[in-house]
Image (cartoon, rainbow, N blue to C red; front, side):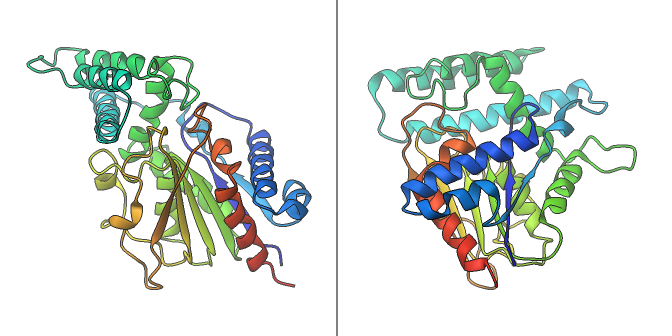
Length: 316
């Protein structure tokens, strides 16, 4: 029996799920070739090695359901917290002097001393800081955003998911509807390798806590789960723990990926009953568009374990 390979995407605009699946598979194939698994490249791309699925939920972010101004303010505040925490993590590392100056300037824009929080002030502060970040060498294209407004708008999706609000006609909140999409991709029964990116790592972690079938490998890419103030306290269930179905968890982060704050997840995620803990590994790309999933998947350190997990999970 072929195992299943489920991709779970992160923040971003509407996308063609079939085209995304093809793109992610081809990136994985590139990484597999570089990892010495050239013989499996065609199997991966054609879907012969595993039944590949793309758990798409981006359309659910299309229109906010009856949001008031206070809800939007809350989302802006969380984006500000996320950026502030990411900046503090970046500033704690050795960086070039010119980058330090710009990062400090962005931080001051987010949290100006003695400034009053007038109407719309938080939104302006976040947008100004985002503009500064997009001008920092090395971070300029880490998410592939064309503007600060687009960057903030897409980061707000993290806040919308974590607010547990926006119920539909059936009373299902936005986060529940998103997890349902992932649950559908995980079913029916059978071993499943899960590769999740960005916000998708939070969605996958929460979904897998109610998934009873084997997950030989969970791979998280550019995860915000390490953000202690902006994300961690809002993830369910608490305390953070490896889902019982997960047999191995590899977490990959790139130094220039601003979203992946405090990436050593094994330091604060509790093991499951199998004593499984996340294993965090740093990768270094060429510094251009480092946050997209395809950038991670093309790395041999990422693709190699995925291909090996697929082979190990395949049964006659």
